[in-house]
Image 1 (tube, rainbow, N blue to C red):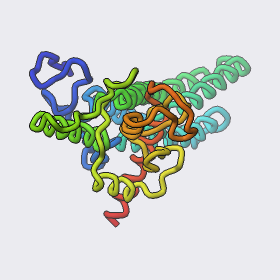
Image 2 (tube, rainbow, N blue to C red):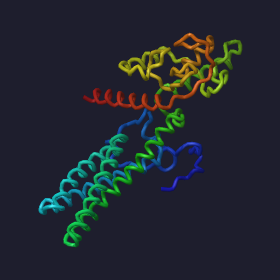
Image 3 (tube, rainbow, N blue to C red):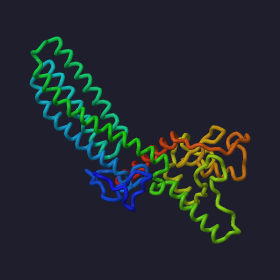
Image 4 (tube, rainbow, N blue to C red):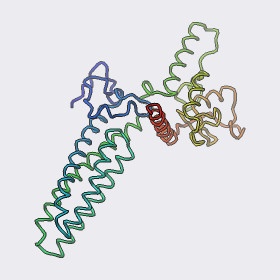
Length: 318
């Protein structure tokens, strides 16, 4: 599907979203999650959703080929019987892969193509060895089996391409390309910063809003979260692992950054700290005010929050 990058609603600096221009028609939309990493479905990138649809078609075709192949292997022996066991396993992986693509379960999509690629490669190697040992007696059977295995290879390729686009989507989130639509502190931060700017414009005597331009290598504002937002965050993720918690706020981090002391903090918390301090919050040693985004912690925290949100929704439905 061609995407019109000249549409007034499409920003060429980020991937086109599904609510911009002609939307992608989603397969099994009623079974999809309503949001991924705090981003609504209609704001997901079009390219990701196109890859998702293609991967679903491929895994369904793979499952059909496996179902047809199983009876052929059940009536034979030797090589045919070996193909029976392979097809049973690949059928299970095809079902898992289709389910994972429908629900945007990245790790399970990866498990599908890695397992299927491995099994297919081993089986083809086995067929080559058998053909070399037995001569031309089983050539016809081998050709039939290899043809049926092509569906597994094709499905693996398409799920791999979908997973690659899924990983790019996660990188774009970490890079801040979805901050305007993502549910979390980024949106809250921007809203609070706008409020601070409006208050300052209306009252020049007030303290100007704190921005990261006050510090080196800091590219985002440092707004103060409201008390209601803090309480909501604590209630939503009460059992958050310490790895994802900010040492200053003791809450889960939405935008983690690493300071010169080597510790990771919530961006707005450490920037607020630096307004009145020039020391480390953890060691009390004097440090510079340079901060670096911690993409690894942010990505892991996003996965954790996404899992907690899904579990909470499941409990609400029950």
